[in-house]
Length: 368
Image 1: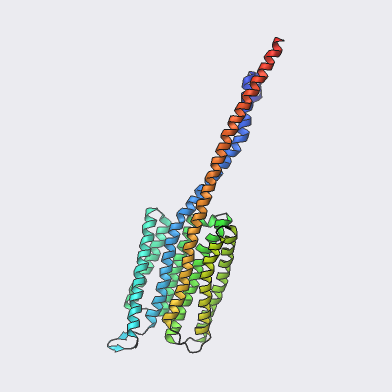
Image 2: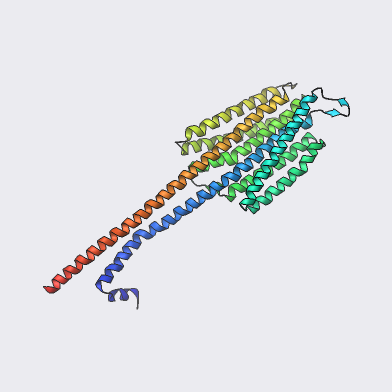
């Protein structure tokens, strides 16, 4: 017996009941499917939120590794005491740089330990493996710096390779927690600017810093070295244009937060422009380099720190954006559930009233 024949054999009130249930299903099923999609959006937003902590921890590692590279450039390029002969008249300065580099190495060790503790706690095995690999590379480099048996060029290359590994781990974190898949403009552009663009920009700036420090310590730079430094400046200009575009799009997508997003960023960009002018005037435009390596390191380091501060600020903004998104989606689910309850009650009430009146009319006609 097919469904149509079965329906025809039902008594009248059961037919009304089936029609009412059909109408209710037509109204509520699409709504329930939509609620399910909204729940998926909430789950994605919560996963993105979870990724902000490891992203910040990895940014801390990158920042300290970059700072350590610049200090290592100063430490390895400065002449030291050889035997009982003072090669460098500013031995006190060399000792200070040595202590500062050691403190920064300890800061880096602590940052790595903090990340490893988080990764173990949250069972991110693929990220743990990558972090262990970069930690092993760091432990291979550290003794050579302590013993002073590595050249500034080798140290620079080793640090750069280490930072590239760290940037790859940061990208793994972004992908693992689906931050790269954020589809809404209010979060997408800020994530792209602060977690992808800014770390790449700081890496270029830090290479400029380490390279410039070596030139200033030597008081000279040949033609090819100047070309290399100039290429870093041009590369940074291209990268900052990308970051600029992302930040302005993020501000446009977040009208209520636009002032803070642009205000904080403009502060960091002003520092960058100051660093570019300093590099141009004191290194690229001068034949004999007389600017203080320590002052150059400090100026560029402050500029790099400004960008890391902005990245931290952006992560807080992203967290607020995601929290607002989760709250709005929860409200949407609540409103849809209220809609389903009200619709169900209304359809039930109208159906019962209609069926009762219809049956009463049929009975009246039968009596007549």
